[in-house]
Image 1 (cartoon, rainbow, N blue to C red):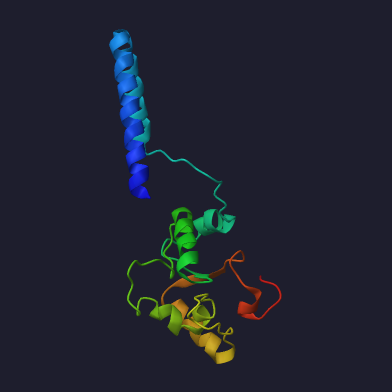
Image 2: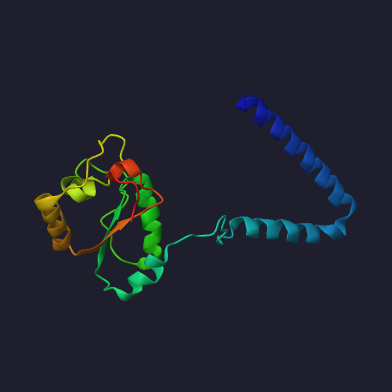
Length: 174
């Protein structure tokens, strides 16, 4: 199928080239204009300008509130998984703070060990291979929070757009 398409495209290109060559033989003064137009098209093709396709919707928490926090403040954003983590890396453009989340290409199984070993963060994992775990309570919650404090996590952010109600066993998200 691709071979037939390629042959047809090659024939159309050759026909277009012959028509263009005949046109330039009959109108030599238009060569400069055509060269300019082709040059501009090539320039526009290689221009690496931003072409926004949709407006960026970023919470004021990331743009305004975090601007008053110290630069070494670490964020832990839930839910955690490879797809949401890409969004959180985009938010990092605005808040410029380190996060527990992130995306690593070709990661080894221990790359997410910190998230999976902390009961509070593990409860926010939405990976299809990881069963949903309930929020820790009591001393387990205290230990999880102390572990996050030890690595300078100041804010635990819950992304309501990506949350599932059953994930935390509550009807509404705060």
